Image (cartoon, rainbow over all chains, first blue to last red; front, top):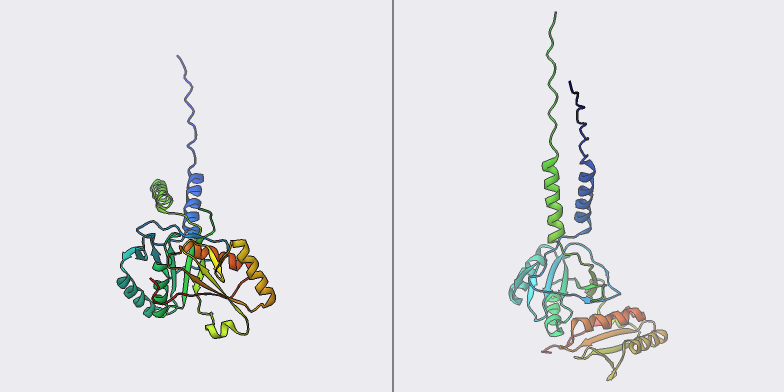
Length: 134
Length: 136
């Protein structure tokens, strides 16, 4: 009679370590990122080394290279954008207005808009910049 | 004799669906996110004083930004270093000196931000952005 040695089962790999890693990565990406609506067109902010940290919240107004406008990720024309912003400012007079203008957008598109937003009552208007070189 | 039924072992909750969900969430965040390092430069600040108070007893220097993006002081084009030196000199004479920026309507945002960067690096803290009404 031939006796065969039973095949030894290898212990299953523990998946706890994998879950830990995946969970840490997930939490990392959720914490370091700030969810923000991106403009429906390309916007590359100007480079500046003296910019300060940007607080969360507020309304984001994007200006494309050709002067196209968007508010919180939705493309709008100037009157519609100002109406929407006016409603937001009525609800929250302390609203921070971030202007994310393309680095090649001209002042003719930017400055009149800043003046109109200021006339709506906005007290905090900031220009979005990036410390990174292009 | 009392017969006791052996308690059935508790069914373990499978972790596999949870891992699947977490992986899907992770991939979603990694793929859909665009990570940008963004800062801000104030354009209108609530703490800003009215022009009459801001200028105070200090002098004012007007910096025009041309359509070519170069800063002009008293009609002369300046390099960033030249502008910084002018501002440093002005601030040494009068620490309350304020700088008024008048960009051309055809100047780019980068030109404005670059000039503001130069002025801030040179020590100017009283910056005002000006626009001519009716400028196209």
